[in-house]
Amino acid sequence: MKVMVIGGGGREHAIIKKLKENKTITEIYALPGNGGMAEDAICVDIGAKDIEKQVEFAVNNKIDYAVVAPDDPLVLGAVDALNKVGVPCFGPDKKAAIIEGSKVFSKNLMKKYNIPTAEYEVFSDKETALKYLDTAPIPTVIKADGLALGKGVIIAETREDAKAAVTSMMEDKIFGDSGSNIVIEEFLTGPEVSVLSFTDGKTVVPMISSMDHKRALDGDMGLNTGGMGTIAPNPYYTEDIAKVCMETIFLPTINAMNSEGRTFKGCLYFGLMLTEKGPKVIEYNCRFGDPETQVVLPLLESDLLTVMQSVTNGTLDTCEVKFSDKSAACVVMASNGYPQKYESGFELNIDNSVKDSVYVAGARLDDGVLKTAGGRVLGVTAIGEDLKTAINNAYSKVDKVKFGNAFYRKDIGAKALKA
Image (tube, rainbow, N blue to C red; front, top):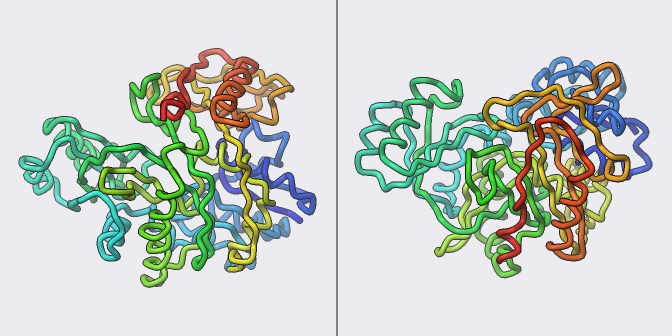
């Protein structure tokens, strides 16, 4: 069986490594992949947003199944285009991917179907938004409507910061057209939880919960990033809270999308805040999260391809999805200066003893030499009988990965251990 995975980051590397456990798969192609995953997949130089070439490649190479992993191609309709030529896919179609593609859509969906989320207002005009901020509660959260590489959210601590954020999004276009419409919403407090879930539009199977570490520096300081590390399971996410989430958030979201004629099949990511008034949705993603995938999939004991195909075929209710009761931790190693200015092109040495535990996000092969090629270079994941062991194991593996300019947080999982 031939499988192709669209995308080129650590998340895709984690998906590919898990798929490789299925012995019926003879070839895995990564489009475009990166130099660091070349040992696990055949990397093809076709961009994640180049849907026309993806379709052409799938047809010419008789691809049996495709996994569309990143948000951009999903929102652009990669699944629709591949389905059209008879390639079954894991991932939502364009109509369903709007749940991440437009924050205005998702907020309005939650309001319409009484799914708990932060209070909010939508603006398409800068002056009206600025006027609203004269009296809005502070701190506040300002979100660009469209996709912005996971960075289209600004938490404003002061009225001045909030107004500056609106101007930068709507006038200076720091997130391009994604900021033409914005959402200004209530600032929620409480522990954050990420829950990825498999769904075929009828059944929802939540995966192990996780906790991301977004800030660049120790102690949750510094700028927001795409994620500096993650642990699973999240200790704040108890069985009782999971039950509440299933009844008030997960199933109502799937039913709401069905009612809107936008049946969602794939991985639906719920970004949650556990507030004093109960769990609320901060955001939806229409795909596996990064770096959450790097701790969730290593704990999956069922065959990933079988689960994905049951999602595609609408038979998830008859598929066993089993997770280990162990813990996992992932430490992201980045280029110093990320998420702003950084240098890359440093030689990357990964000791053979830890290769199975490393998910490469930003690397290229230069005359056979692996070199860094991005802000987040890789994630190092380890499993343990408990969270403390998993964290210790991850950091001991980090010591066996070397590249110039490397930096990483030293406190991944510390907050979870306190809990």
